[in-house]
Image 1 (cartoon, one colour):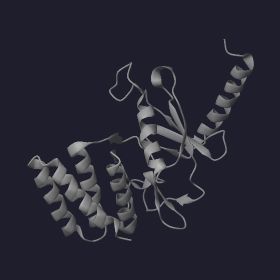
Image 2: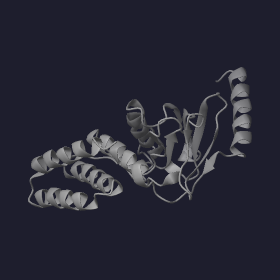
Image 3: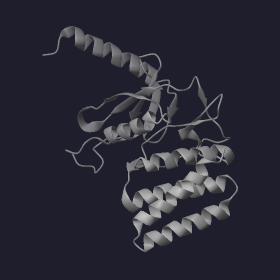
Image 4: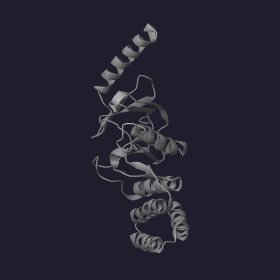
Length: 226
């Protein structure tokens, strides 16, 4: 049996978190974000029943996959550090505790669901390409899911709920789309269109290795845009 003191501390903590949850920092269709009881952290709590990636009762909870993908980006310095993952019986209320980046990062854009534009979009796609090279495809990059360093403008990627691991042709496609979108944001959409068509022609021909080589060459050019 758990010690009475531990149970009391857990009860008190949950009461404080419930109070913080009533004053959310952010909220979407699938989760709410609120201040942690630990200074410098926030908590993202799922508002759906998390039954795992494939919806199977015995499957690993989806929240763990999400946290693992965010951790990869955090190691690259482009996502908040993951502090903890908590899962609960039935998957209701699963949560990720992470670094609070609000002091140094800000939102941009006029509307929450609009997408980054101009150099913001170039930088976002440079980071998406870097993640693709690590085998991670991250989507849903609207203004609500990206923050920018107040001093340098460097993006910080939030919310890995729509992300997955990729390899082979899927990895090539993720890198290609990030690169082509980055070219378009930089005002050279024609270069992006030619690049995308070249890579996809190779993929359709079954030459995944050559397609990846061309995709890496294109991404190298995108990275040079400052």
